[in-house]
Image: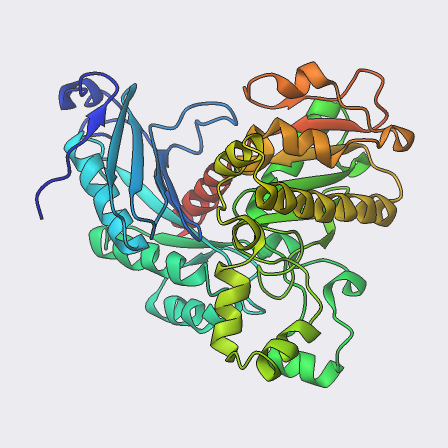
Length: 431
């Protein structure tokens, strides 16, 4: 295959201009660079950063995003050395997206074999009952993650692709798996257990695991500082709203409930996933519609949610359709908001006292309409959104509630990559 063509927003940075960074291209210097791969259901985020020097708002040495995997046209955006490069071509799967990304990084002198990488951190969505802490990746660990694919069919395969490609390219560097389920491992039994036969549940690992844990944990750790309170005094609701979406109720830094369940299919309405449904629908479709279990799995995971109702799962496209008065788009949006409001209310009751509600991830950070509609009419509950603050461009952590709002509302950009990088370097140093 020919080398991919890139379209920079300015002239490419010569390799010599990045060669002065410590640990890059053989230049001596103390660094703790980590490569972080965050493979989602339809995207891959990647960064090269020094977690010991980075802050919540500092720019990584390299960052990139692979979008619209499996769509007719994909897109890779790379930021490195103060420059931005864009590659647009079909990206059939995650393995090809990673290969193209690494090639693009190599072209501009910042590839994973050109930078002194100390560890590679991988986001892994489902750890099942086996994993509650980050793990150094071995062949056995990969096999164990693969065994959990039935619990996260959209995500664990993508995570494994990232692990296998990166291990081939960087075989002599420690690779670390950081599990989305880890933060919710200590949820109280009343929240973690389903009301199904206890013996069946125990034998088959049936329980609520929760997901987006790295994001919920990271974001929730930023909120006490914004409030000027110690973490143990803060009750908060965090809303991770992206193509996948989840909410969490957090008391004193500990998760007490979350919307996703045994799999990432439960809870909020998502881009392509249904969220909570009556379990009887599955039996009905099997018996009446003649659908197989695999057909139903495909329907609920990939052909439902916002996309199933409107035909699109990108909220930018959905907003454009709403402005064109598309009734299907408007219905999909209202179903999405209705479910979101239900869980916000439920978690306010579960916590009893709420100090803050925080929006994060792609939709949560960037869609002011979602934020406004999710909290509309809740002034009686002490939630008052400031329209001007809410409409302001996204620029780091910020408050979007009024000064007199009893419950503060924040937008906090998630930084799962920084959290994963810290875990990766810490474990690598113990090897």
